[in-house]
Length: 81
Image (cartoon, rainbow, N blue to C red; front, side, top):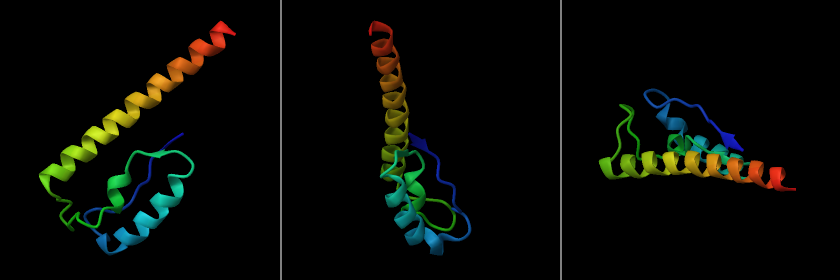
């Protein structure tokens, strides 16, 4: 299951640790596409190291692609049964 977690980036960064805990719980039930919201290195301006941003973007894209591929494979397997 794909999970979209919403939380403040520009305001409320003091809740980043809480976000991280909630995200860890949600990850037991699926892929959290917005896992970066729990990253305590994000500043109140919403900035983080460029390297981290690139990793997050790539991970989000890969998670979405893998989800689509798995859905397609499940559909094909059902068709062949």
